[in-house]
Length: 96
Image 1 (cartoon, rainbow, N blue to C red):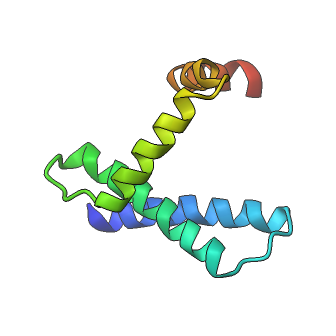
Image 2 (cartoon, helix red, strand yellow):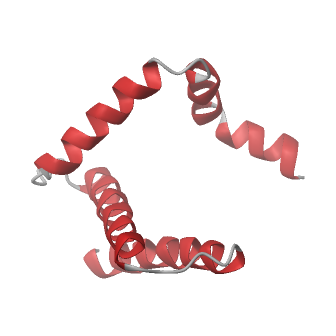
Image 3 (cartoon, helix red, strand yellow):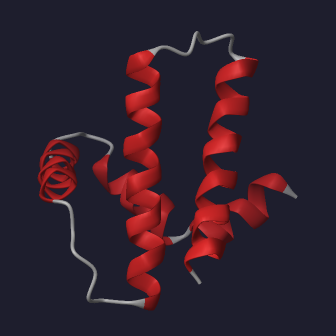
């Protein structure tokens, strides 16, 4: 199971790296740190699907709480929530 999770996380990070390359964004230490954070978030989310007993990273949980609070004050918050909840439907209508 962990190997499959690692592979899936790596595929997502590779997708992000491809997007950065397409935009000619220079990869430095800051970008590396951001990618590590993204991969930890993704891995934790996948892991939660299979095992609710994982130890959560307090730094990640604090950052997520801060982002959620910031999002709630954003005027497009309801649109973001709608998009997330209806992503599959949105994708089918707009991509096909």
